[in-house]
Length: 195
Image (cartoon, rainbow, N blue to C red):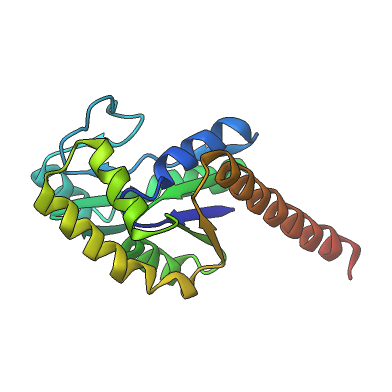
């Protein structure tokens, strides 16, 4: 199964995704490619695969990306190989991607579970972005404007998590994943029984 987690920059979707992957068996995190520079504490190959624009162009030309998008002036993309490997091994895959990427992925993987993570308010988002200290004032303004546009697409998602408390958001995302697995297992069991 594919679990696609999206939301505005600063919503906490990456932190949430990584914590949940550690807690659930047979769930793996798809490490995306990006052309942006690493933030403090980020590790290449764990948080993202940090590559050049030229390398990203090569991935596009080689059709190696399941989806890609330009977000805040930088490109991000999901390796198609990650999805193929997960599907062939029976491991569920969690993707932390932007709304544009989710829109693109939905066209190819209609059976994915799409989850939108949002902060409780724009003010809470602004405070989180300031606390992160990785963007300047004008960049934070752009990200807040982007968040307003992205939240208009919430209705296209299967689930919405308001990330007011990280622990509560972890419980909610864990519950969604486990419930979707139960639904899948029930469908498989019923088909084997001829129901």
